[in-house]
Figure 1 (cartoon, rainbow, N blue to C red):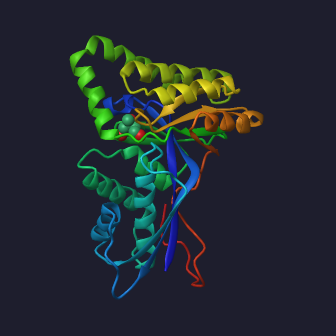
Figure 2: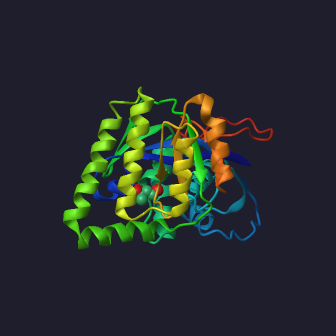
Length: 299
Ligand code: MEV
């Protein structure tokens, strides 16, 4: 049997704008999905379309056990993490020799198939490699890891990423004169943020601006507005929704000393808080039960 894990992700800047070729910055976060795969002669029927497609693409069959620290449908990339960890565990258990890049590509194909062509390249890439990534179109550049102190607030309002992306696309088609400058402003904030990674106050302000611009695109939600305002009032440098919006999650950039206070403020409004930082590992092999095998996945 082989157990692998893969991290979730947050967008620090640039979500939605990335869909139109603008830059975005995403970061892998500590909560992970753990997947154990075992060769079995008579594997039980796998019910999740993600898992089914993982076994299909690898051309094998096995049993699978999942333990997730990531809530699903919350904008934190849980389906990508499940897919990346499952493919990595299959790769290991069945002695295949796929690289990390291969796993990332296959994970994207699986997500695309299950999500009917609308998957995010960012989610599978960040989950495979970990760290901080600048995305622009098809290109992804690893940025130097930063120890941003984050509190994530899950609104517990589920959302449909594909629908929100489509909505913004429609808005842009109908009102290019209004929407294009908003996307340009998101791009400006994303680019400027990279010059300010060491200045939390300015970075927090950029997050506030990015949140307002996303609201202007129409992807806000009253619960996101509430959690963002409460997090700021509790001492965050800045806060914004993360991912597609319309529910899902928000992030607050915090001084270390305020993290608990910000988390309590989020929970007091009915959100679910996760205190976290960057995860630089990406997909990784977890302790396996007795069998002495080294990682079979290559970077
Ligand atoms: C969703 O997590 C982020 C979006 O920008 C979509 C995408 O990048 O695929 C809304």
